[in-house]
Image (cartoon, rainbow, N blue to C red; front, side, top):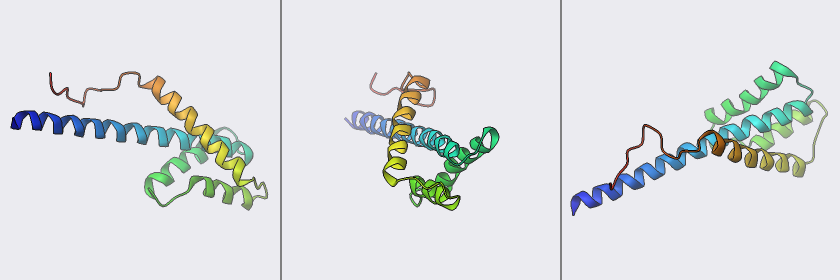
Length: 121
């Protein structure tokens, strides 16, 4: 009986790990896509735009839970006089998240990788 409980525990742990990996990948991709959207409105091109987008990803990694990426973008836009309505910025963030979910689903069609173990036979 103990083995069965251990298998159940392992399956919950594997599911939690998988869900967290997926959340991380979606959030990072969302921030990159959103950063590219914002960079275009900030007048950044090519390498500057990509660096800005990567900066948003990195900033959230460094300050997890303490950063509102939409607020950061709005501040950056206001700083150069290219202010945008909060509703538009939040809508762009939501669109970036939807696109990120779709892209990640396409990039990782198989839910389990080599680092996950199958439990329960």
